[in-house]
Image 1 (cartoon, one colour):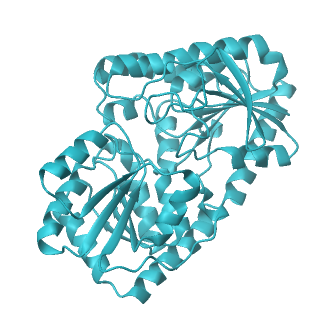
Image 2 (cartoon, helix red, strand yellow):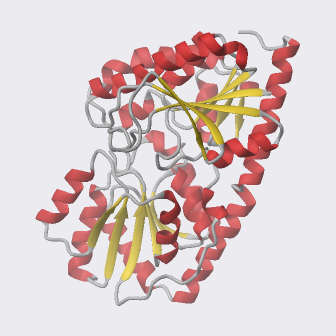
Length: 405
């Protein structure tokens, strides 16, 4: 099968759940895959060094064929610039798929943004839609300016794309149920949980020893995470437990505000370490005494499993988590985490204190329990097997004329 993997973001951009390893697995199953993506600009909103914006560029990334298409680079709080970012790639992807649709049997479309799915639908190519976030819910939850005005047209766009997708993958049971509530036929939606590329690296149980207990956060510093609560927890800890240190890896639209708030508060127990290469972040996690997961308190997040959940479990470290819903249930069942409600700095500070006071052997047991849970429920082998089966079944229906739009 000739597959176009259509995604606005791809490596070397960070936090790519389904990147080179995913494509290679599809190819090892006997399929030809072309990644159709944009020029790398996430999360800074600036084109990466070594790239020059042009209409189209072919390259090889990790042995995978990649076609990069022009887009307007942006990732900030401006709804106008973010919309231009999405719409520009939509136009590029639509033109590319429309004029080259005979080269592909099927498209695998990664959402968000929904505009990537819209391009595939309008191009007339059969496609499987991978729903990682629900739109327009996510736009509203992240507090983007003008979100209320966009809700109705985005909702209509999502319905159009859902109706024309040959099949839909949901990353959680909660998202699947919400899609069904939005009139998507249940038989059309399958759950394939995300995995973590951490399983391809050796995980050490030897955090760096120092006089401070180190809790590490890695990922987006954005609106959805509401990391101002972590700053508030650090304020509490600085007075009560100065031996606990929080290290934040990553960047995002809230990074400047978070740094300024911590600096103005004179916090010496929180460090903003910036972005590090994907091959390095696993080592930084492995060196931590514990890992931190934090999301805002929004109904959408109760049905969303942030990709850090799987990654942290795979790393074999105990976890302090301020989340609700499905992610909280997974972490509770794993035995790897201390859980508190989101947006409660005092509870978060108490949880960090409790983790620091937990004996080393018990924390190591929590880490091993997390790894064991990951291997049972989220392994790459399990996820890729289900994905390949769904793609081949969908293609079989397409060529048999059994799927109607």
